[in-house]
Image (tube, one colour):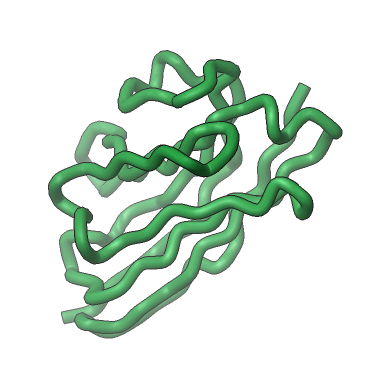
Length: 124
């Protein structure tokens, strides 16, 4: 069992930055690949980024590539999403999720555990 809690969301102007954190409970955090997803109002949940168990492999959605960076610290049971050059279209609730497979996935269906989410709002 893994419990996840996101933090770091908020209101930021276009072009600004935010760093999201996801704290995980349990001693098996390093057994999970981690992903970030988001859901904007009226839209489906979409994949943002994922990172492998060891952090050696990452993958990004085209919409955030070059602007967002996913990282993890297994000693602290945490995963992060550094978001730079934010745009109004990045406005959404952001969720972290844990996948028991080594690399993780772009598909939300593959993830076993989810956090409650944190709101990110980018003003124009």
